[in-house]
Length: 424
Image (cartoon, rainbow, N blue to C red; front, top):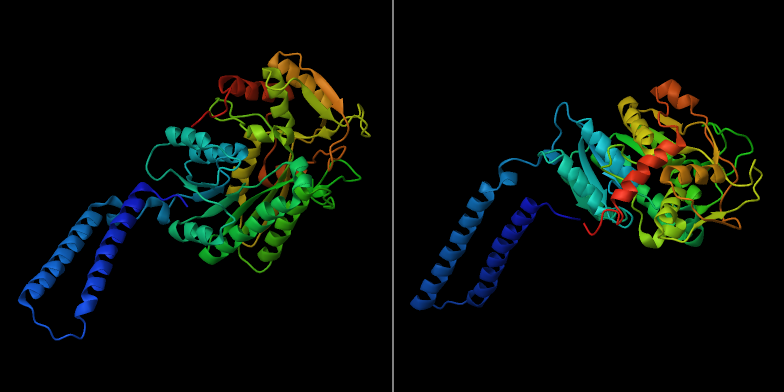
């Protein structure tokens, strides 16, 4: 777990004082139980005691001069009128956009991320935008370490958790399923246990339409049976089940948002999607389109052209990230104790992969080369949402529904950040 500079200073000083005390105790041991009155030794012994006492006094003076000794961190105490939100995975694509929106809405934000998929550069952008004291802190930690997670909760006064942190590639999940069950299901359990132990009462859980699998009927409603067909969807459904089981005997406020394929970026160009280069093979179609447009890869590989759809390619519901984080904020505002809300977050309209590629060509102005390949394991033909419930209960509806415009926004960020967030 990363330690804030002032905390680090205190730990170092306390350890130094403790070390002197241990040295004194060790050196005193030969004198124990021995009646030997050597004036020189007695004088030396008294001198050592005075030296240790002086050092201890100096340590106390220095610590009292430290701001964190005089007043607790603003993140460690509840403050009237301020909602402190823990954003797990807040250095990632969706999590960073959510953190930006929360900060704009005057929430206090703590980001916890192990940076395995996220970018510290995104955190630096947020820190530059909101440098005021008590607005944003970043903690480098892995949610799989229950002891560290417990420490984070004990040292911070969270009012709510937005749990984004997760690996999230369908193809990768079929190749390394255990990684997905551990990272998604097990880590969610760790977070939930910490929330219960420390009295954090509100959870906004980032879930996915992959929990539905390949339904027989479209569009998907919240009542559609969940029959996931890949480890990613299965791991997310298991996490949902754990949350729902726990909520039955708890006064926790729970919101589960099952969203569809995320595209776009911050309209003002401050944040964007910057996946790890080694994960390009498993990444979102938008990232692959942009890589092809920039010449990073020779062309776009469309996997599957024989699905039972109007043009043979998969149909998906593409939701702009700006709309998605708006749904999270509305869910947070509407969350109520002892209540569970489950919502699909989508546009209600399906677009085929071929339609998406054509929109990407127009957005980038590049005639992207397309190779058609066999199906990818774990994929399904058609998935799009019925967002009626979230509109009715949270007054949310997608605003950025022009596919080409969302891709243009994302493309502007990609062109301005050819190395993602760079080496930052």
